[in-house]
Image 1 (tube, helix red, strand yellow):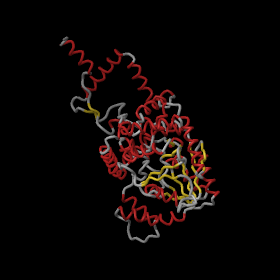
Image 2: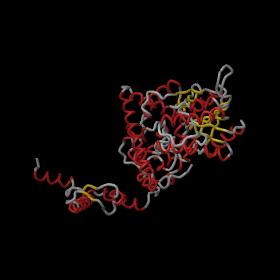
Image 3: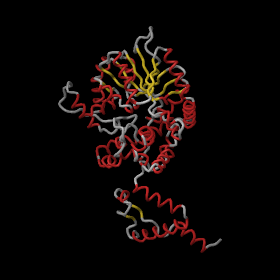
Image 4: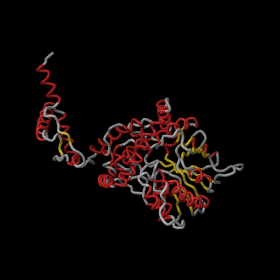
Length: 475
């Protein structure tokens, strides 16, 4: 996994020119939005639940050390084991050590964004383990050797034809004369291929949607059931989770689940919601004989005492991505790392450093839609503006952008000068573009006019018109 998000502009241009990607994004974009709205309209108390969810997450973050220690104590009492990792390297070393201790060879995985964040697959494969993703979207992109482009729909950038061709190429043991054409057939073939993998796995690795301090439970939410198979069939289950996933009680989880499903996929509840509390007991019919939870920090503790603490409330529903016009135009790969969209434009600079992702805070129109749909009320536009300010003060913003901003700031501090310059500029542009009513090309604004026309400004500014009206009508 790359640890830099440089090259955002170049990847964005390629994404906009990729007609297949544009087709896939257009198909998925409206579905997420409309389904979410329908689910919310059917639940009058949704806004109240969101406010309650925000309070739950804030309380957990205020007492994060207490609840993490409570989770460890409760899970240990149930026979599980908790491991602590400050960095991605520590987390991967611990997972590798667990797999070696249990003499594992084949590892099945459920979808885990934290696993992507710490580059877990790469670490396991480098140590000789066979790793198979079992979430259908993750399985598809594993075959394609690509990272996920969405946090809940990893293969949303793929068309049906591309997926069918991948299966035709990699599923050689299934005799077919041509690629599959229908979605049910594609899904059924993935089941056939993965069934033997589930049954022969030595270790199963999943993420966690929530960790419950009260009971030591891991809450796992999926729509395919692969999470249950990964966590119960192999003799060893490893959970990799970031530290902010902990919440106080099971009652808190019920509130969070009610807003998660509706915000993510427009469902009242996802198809499978599992609570996993320790390894198999003597009277259990199935389940792993060992359960390990690896808790990953990776910069999150450092965020607690800052304005970016609010970002730790995120429950990974993906609503901000689904409603973001920038993400909807370029997809997730353009962001260059694990987390795309508005959430990624904040998390990536916080985790990797602002110099590793200088363009991401700028990849936003600040329209505020992401904040409106966030179920835990994260002020995403405000955090993006703060990152822009940090980039400017740390001189990360390139000179070609710093100079116009500095010039504008100088003008803004002197109202008369600002008014005079704006009057002159508006009048000049208004007269030059009066005939066509728009500019197709404009010096110093080529980035705008290459993709759209710039409307011609009025010859007179608002202030000029207002002053003229006051003179002519003093009353």
